[in-house]
Length: 112
Length: 119
Image 1 (cartoon, rainbow over the protein chains, first blue to last red):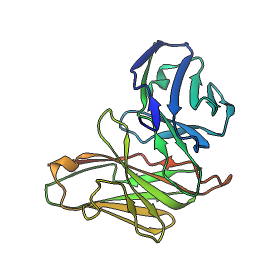
Image 2 (image 1 turned 180 degrees about the horizontal axis):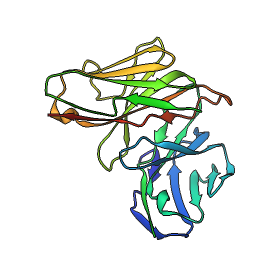
Image 3 (image 1 turned 30 degrees about the horizontal axis):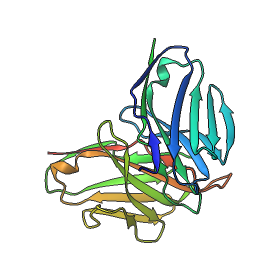
Image 4 (image 1 turned 90 degrees about the vertical axis):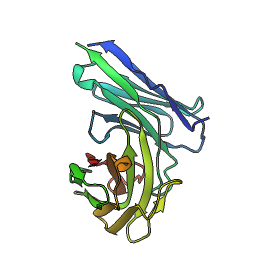
């Protein structure tokens, strides 16, 4: 079993829809949770950063962490064609500068 | 803030030659840098972790002598692919973490990547 599971998609939704992206994990030591967006042939861009359980909102993006269920989500409201990208979840224990554990990424396409 | 650059963005070389890729943190001190490799439509594969002034820690299966990593300063790390072969062709991405307010040391900021093609 992988430490982090993420549905690879592809996921296609119409413009304006709410998108829900999810990851599950098995390591209860993870305390920091991140979502990255990666456009084709580009480096990943940090979208959201959350510590422990709870919600965090930034514009059209909302990140949720449920540590009891070991489940994290990213919601995108009013989706735009420019949101079409691969979304990677990542998590870490936060002990010093240690490596993160990444999901495999979900390919998202927003249909105009 | 938290900008990471990579150079070159694209490189084509002949088989048997060596290629050096630079990764720079532009607005923060990167105490740790990570080097990843990514194949088309695949996720990131961590190759090694480098801490400033120390030897890099390589992931299992990554050849240390083939992928030389140097992290000589708090803003620069280099990856040298030695005696490159066509199977080394890939997208190489670095990331950095370090001292930044708020100092969490958990976020990683990625460079734009370097596409290596070995003929």
